[in-house]
Amino acid sequence: MRFNPEIKYDTEELEQLISKGEGVQQDFKQSISSSRKIARTLAAFANNRGGKLLIGVKDSGHLLGCDTEEEMYMVYEAAEHYCEPPIDVHFSVYETEEELSVLVAEVKNSLRKPHFAMDDHDEWQLYMRSSDKTMVASKNTKKMLEYEDVEGESNEKLDSKEQFAIDYLQKNEVLLPKEYARRLNISLQRANAILVKLTKLGLVLHNKDGRGDYYMLR
Image (tube, rainbow, N blue to C red):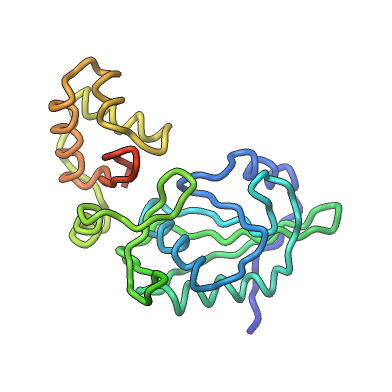
């Protein structure tokens, strides 16, 4: 199998990508050891707003380089055979002056969501990104993704408090109800009510982890 990635020599562009670090929409891998496992990250990217997988880069951002053909094959297998429905991935390769190759596998915000990937028990699970981690999504998030319209737009005009939540999430990965209430000087009950409304409008996604409930842009 042959791939035709876009070849880039702009090391400054690569450095800018790496400087953003890992997060909801970006992940670093030294190499791909399992197509099955990396499929979870690809699915999570597709279920959020897309994302980029930089392969040949340590968690610290240090460049190691990789065998791009081998890594593209592993990612392709993950996207085609371990994601349901399959995910489209765009490949590009950065070539450095030190003769290191870094593969970027980019996943767009999918119109075919929700996407599932297999867990360790051979069961299909819905995955989302939380900060720089890939995790199983909450039941509420699953329902939102299953029934949302593909455009995800609402014609309803937002008031200033609702718009604040959207503006905040455009600059930050997650919003916790307590933080939202504190910033707007409103009750926690009111903050939760607003965030639930934004979830029903399809503008944000609700999830939960050790921190409690939190919200992300859809």
